[in-house]
Length: 313
Image (cartoon, rainbow, N blue to C red):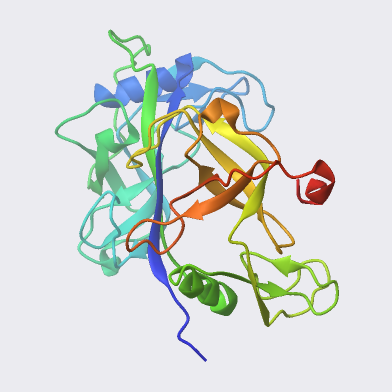
């Protein structure tokens, strides 16, 4: 059996969101080394501050300052920090109930080892030297021998409040396509598109999945399809993707290759974007050394009849 492929992949994008008045005050407070909670109608103080009571769903906006000191309610040791975590040396993840709060805040505790951490230990905020209005303005917590802190009673009003944040979302993982798609990828490198046929319904899956999702049977019979195909549906892309050297607008389409039982997706080139249409007959264009088609272009054939591809929309 050939070796199954695997590769490290990263999914990453910036997530931008605006802030309501409560969370704006909470994050602006961190920038100014002030920790704010919000008081519920029944007198509880929630930290981090939220805009709605998680128990009653009531809107809440009564801001109250709490102390930067508190008590560990539970913890877990992180022996191997990952990229982007608060500390680059082993640390404890802790839930800390700050003095004056009724709920706990999750953050990192800088401690020499797990033997130095315990439920009930006293800790205090270690502020980041440079702060911008984010949870990372708390660099971490550190052990503290003192008693409950006394907040100054800040009212939550600041100059130049933070009104929005941009959070970088990222997922690192190793992907293995499995036996069927490994063969599919290796055939693509030879400029051949090969799917697998279901032994029951006889549908040819491209890319192959190793099993028919309709019949539940394993697929192993390889069938070469294409290389030409038909545009079944498409969209016009107007937003340029990072690290993708393609001018916008361009067209991304579902393409039913001749002999395939379902459509795959690919970019359409060699034709103005506003002339792409359902039924357009296309063929792959390969670049030198490319392991998959760079895009598909019109073949010049008459458009396919709708009845021949309607089941693959």
